[in-house]
Figure 1 (cartoon, rainbow, N blue to C red):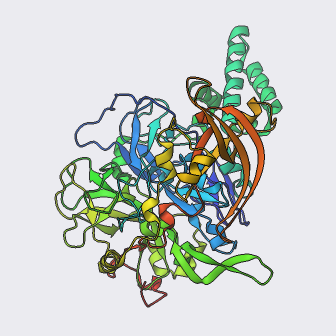
Figure 2 (cartoon, rainbow, N blue to C red):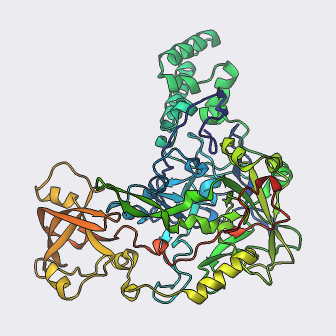
Length: 611
């Protein structure tokens, strides 16, 4: 179970060394979100200066860094502060569907994990991913030992609106992704969350077939049954061993793979389970964490004190001058052009292609990366809450420094050589420039180039035509009982141009129109009639639409389909049309954070000329 290695790499997975030589396009991470979870009031064994969360080498060979509990957590306790999630939209299309290097592929999550993010794919966008550049990227997965689950996100833009605010579209509205303990977690334990089985099955050419949760559970059932029968019949050790070996030989391959091979291992598995037997060192001592780990809970998320900045990071305790604010592992992106988002051009045969001479904007992820003016390299941080650290050119209280615990030998390699590094290996530290009080916002200097670019953006920024009418689908969906306007009412009082209405097709099954859909299947629809007197709440008649809404051709084709009636308000929801959300605004600010020249390796300076 590895987190950072995917293509043409050597990894050590659960004791089996794999040496693949193929490229694999893997599935994004998925999880089961927390729904209406009551978080325990238990706060763990924390004392004033005790760290509750560490980054250190993972107990999984080949997996790079991992997250560890610094204190005891009980089931339901929050383990991490709320972090942001950054949408990455149609990256493959904008890169001409080529097999390009993008290490984030091993860290991103399926957009369906985040409330509403996947809605953008309803009307023509082919692929939306969610980069969770904090706990969600740093935590590993070990099926059978998963002890943490992640929450859904919340969406808002802290009151900024595209009609008046130059900061809109420059930060993600998806935030407050927290992680909670699924069970009691002892201090020193490595933290694991589920990536979903597809993350592993889509990488079988690299990782081989790996045991999933059900295989460990099956193995534990065999061991429990073996112990019960052996005790009941008082069998000798030799007969008991023969019986167990017979059961093991009859078990499915992946179950047999995790079953113990010795009598001593069998005894340990009876106590701790097979998953812990195969990963016996996932619990570290407090002394080990303090020596080899870095504290990762010195900061929390909140609304920034800086106008137009969105959210920020704030100190959770007094941080002394010169001490660590937070560690920040880095994902290297050798070619900054991977984030270009192009206009379209119509070919002679009528096909739509990207217009590489016209860059409309760049992926929002660019704003969360470090860069240097003379290099094509981007370094994308994924420390806990560190993506929320904002800028102050004159009075920063924190600075970035290279960590002493990373592959500093990479400094001597040219940028193109980093294409061969299929795992994260670089790390920076955020270090306090003075004493930082608890509750104070953490601020670094993004560099003069960034400062000049932002000031120029603010001076020249103007809203685009129609921006004053924009309302996001999140605002409209905030009232699940709000009255829907019919087609006739919309002719006089239309919804904003970016909005259309969708229906859950399950309701057509309930009324006998269809048989082959589930609640997850949705369809664009029209609200034909509203009936206010048929029950305690209004009921509606709607008609499904087959919408071909292609931003590339800027045309929408609508084919009318089945009717459904009567259906409640819960059968409908609002969605944004493709490429209409704030992150896609062509007048939104885009610029990476700049690494000081004295820190940047000379070998990496491959594109003189600046941004």
